[in-house]
Length: 384
Image (tube, rainbow, N blue to C red; front, side):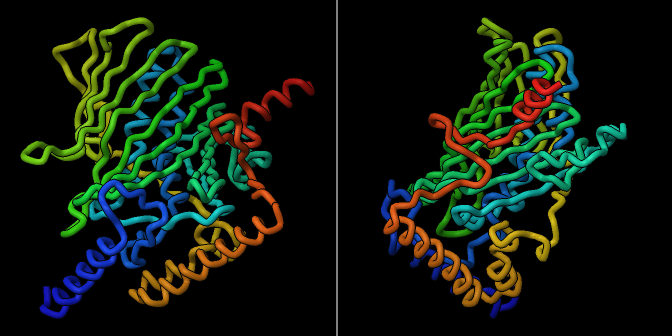
């Protein structure tokens, strides 16, 4: 590394430390803290949530399995595959905070998807009307600014399976690290078996923020199905201060009314995970290998065909300037978007107008997609 590059990196790091420490105290909620533009990841948080579906074949396979036990195991396998693709680098970077009303749409091809003519038709009544019925479509929307809530939905009509979820992120300054707690849940609906699997989310931590920041996941989460009684607990273990390994997970899967797990999984959530089953306790098998399982590419419309509030088009100027290392212009473009959001919020408040969401609505304490596949299926059934 050249001396000039080392000096530049030192100056950037010094600016980052000074900027952060001038605004925060330990335990402080970072929701309203303005972080410097140069640590941004060049994509919106809404797009990052789409990476939960980076292995769409694992998601769709849940509905193919014939027993509740196998469906729960596959649900856990999909769940454990859902985090590594969103973390492209061990270096901690922050995606853009979505603007209220912002949306992100994409779809995924499924390897060896059905070629039945009915499955290759467009799902024109779905969340991504240009996606086919044998593909997984995904939509996310920023439904609230204070608190910052993102809602998202995915489905595969040919497999009759969907995922409906929402996340409210809450960040705290912890001294030498930043904790991002993901409050919310996702529900996988398997229509042919009338089953719902409720999933919760781990927290994320940016460690060593005064040197070279890196990311890890931590906390205990669950996967459960009320109808079948099957459940799972997952422990994302943070690295001990001395020794130990990073990125470790331990998961246990339970049959109904059983206190002893019939399946135990351990390994790295962004590496290889191994499973042992009670009926063959002396043998372990690869449960999920995130390093050698292909990540499917998101299929997104070109920028010139996107709406003004779709993520990539909305943030295109910030992304362009960050890509070309023009931090000053990137900051100006980011400020312009945020200022517009503040002005529009002020106008609504003065006019006494509530923000109207586009594709999601609040039901009790949860956010759900307006027109899920189960609702559309019931309409078809009632009209036939």
